[in-house]
Image (cartoon, rainbow, N blue to C red; front, side):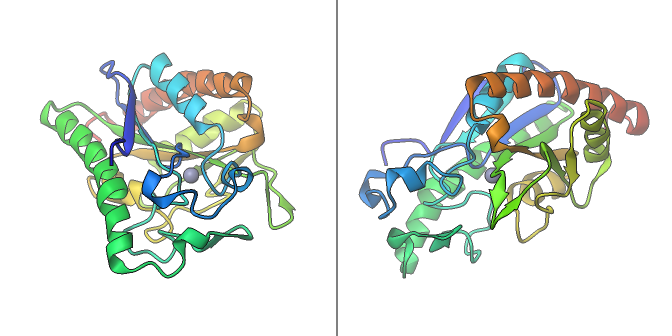
Length: 253
Ligand SMILES: [Zn+2]
């Protein structure tokens, strides 16, 4: 494949944050055509996390921090699922069939893992290893966005904070966002688990790093204005959350 499966934005400004976006990309490898899914369908939330590219890149610049983004559509392979997970390569998503994903043989699914999933996670791993080698405190910030309406239900949250084994930083961020007058889901619209997620369990929880998985409602960040607004908000609140975290728990994490 000529295209790397990840893009790196921003730079390490010495702060604690490493940003990752598993679902920021919309590309499909040439060899897979369009997976049999129309451009209109691929542009929906089933194809990517709408708006999170602009938020992540703006945030990486403002902090500053390194952002590692997945380039390919989650319809090719979901980089927030363990390899082989039943929803790693979906045959259907939110009512839309994915003809190019039906009855894949092991060679076909293995190729997607080798060329897309593994290089992306290896890049995250390398960044975390380098930070550990220089004893730089690190928290992983996993960025996502969610569709405002799912199966007829209008989701009330502006954003959601997802957490599992280590809720310390998540609880602080939850309070800070709610102090802004926002409706913020606590493990809503999704709960973070070992099976429904891969990036945070693999890279943060296994290493004992503090983390936040944040979900932003897509209608709020569909425009560049909304993306800039959320990037600025997170650039202000994440360092504030880290200061509180260090006061409470120390920065050795
Ligand atoms: Zn996502």
